[in-house]
Length: 205
Image (spheres, rainbow, N blue to C red):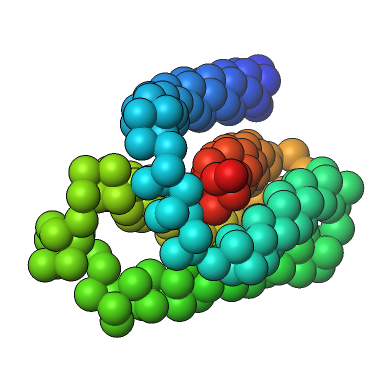
């Protein structure tokens, strides 16, 4: 009887955890949706300036990061499936690959941002403050949105690292995997946001 009650409570906790994650994702979509709306309005007003600003960004780095995140979405989904099929070794490998792709993304972002900082283009710099309104809006939104997204990448890496440790110690297994499921859901959100950011910022025609 006590085992049945414990199992019921565990199932209820899992359902609550999933609902909490979906509510969190909804608020994140509202946040980035609002940013995309602001971006779109200013892009219509200053289309030429935004186009010129996008030419300063590396499409190659943006494309590599897009591929890295798409691949990482696949690997984290495979990790979840592996746990459900009791393949612990494969799950650890897939989570490790997901973290590796995240590190590749952040390294490329560091290279890209580093080049901008090297040339004196960063929030609060004299060069940035001297830009006309259209260019200033573009680069301000670029730094804010990609910076916020990079922060989400870091949070996701912390969450997936916790999942890696728990899979290794069998605390995440085929009977209890909601933390990894939520981690994978969060990671798909991070990937989805970048899929919108890449063409909006890098491919303005």
